[in-house]
View (cartoon, rainbow, N blue to C red):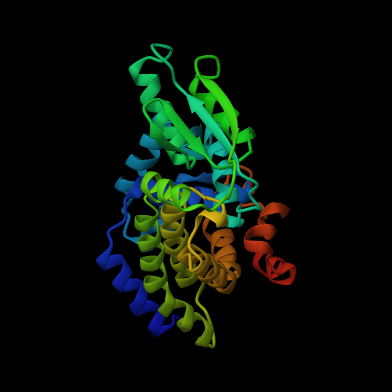
Length: 317
């Protein structure tokens, strides 16, 4: 039986904030379908997202566009179409997973990654594409042709350069902060280049939006699978949007009361409350060319620090 308070919250959210179909489907593939193999029958996907206000025509148009953008690839078997994540789509999700589901902030010792784009080494189109990818990964432009991030992790950076075709056209350097890691000039530079005030405001808006649904989930005697699916979708759609604007800077460069920490805790708590029912709903609604949706990969249960294995078994049964 559907919960009245949760139903009212869902109705208000869907009315107040219209959803962009392409972005919403990416959220669902990344959070829900990818752990189950990354493939789903289009008809099942249409049924699944109907309660979110997406009609069949909109869904078909969106998956077609996502195929053109190399996020998805389709396979026709008889009269049915199955959409799977492409290798590029999986790779982008893998980069995002660590930022979304894990607290990626580690002890910082003053290391910086620097990308220099000198002279005419890049065409205007490639320069814009690379800049977009680096900004998405949390880099900031501190001067013309200079993008930086306070990190010593090189794997994601090299992957971005390789995918963009810029690995042999830019200069990659590592630098080290000398002196205090949280000096006033450094914090002023960080605030200016990364717009942390805007990111903090978005985190606070996320907290204000989802605080009430967390209370309603905790107090509910029973939960409805479809309502849990909608809540988890809206939760991760919004958290993903804010999180991917967060440059994931070291804690030494953030304020002591950084709202991103509270937002992550709230997101984790809501996810823990409704993920099991959502998984059961997915197993009922979606299917692949080989039959029922396979159970989620073992790595799924490490999200947000770990999901109870007993609930996982119940959701997959």
